[in-house]
Image (cartoon, rainbow, N blue to C red; front, top):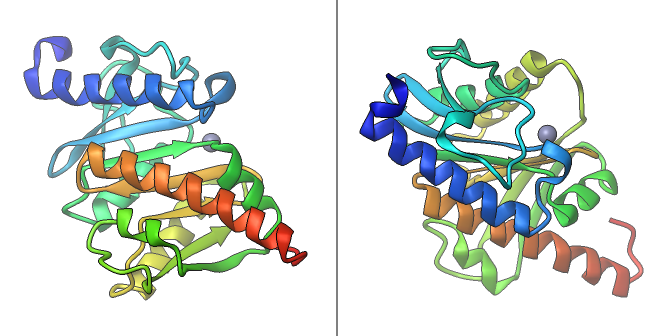
Length: 212
Ligand SMILES: [Zn+2]
């Protein structure tokens, strides 16, 4: 039984806790968003499609392999491939959070597809391995699509083309943000930093009267 497996339960509980925290912040409105955590070299725990992310229990979490195929009961999120391909690309990856957080989502709608560079902010040090505000953090922006497989290919191609560049997440235009980390704690910290940084970037551009 899946719910008797202690590794699964630990990871599933971490996803439930993240859901409560992020829902309270307004990041996952109307059952949107999805979360995952690595279980093994070739499997992950991920939220089942359509559940209220503020009221998750371990019964709302299922297991899929790195090709996104179910390994337990349940209908995986439509965006499962966007999670599983990241774990396949990054062996050290421990957690992925996808939310519809307001500031990254608003920013994504006001910027064309391409790369956004965040620089000059002290909070960049919230990202794993970044030790100075002088760092430059690239965030790729992709047009939204309902063809998840094609989008997963584009994200994977971007990561393959930028192997040395620090990258902790990307935006989907008018949709939301994907963020990752080697642990759930790091992933949550990265997401909170992105929410702050895109908010402050929007305000900076507003004050400078520069259209993002
Ligand atoms: Zn979404």
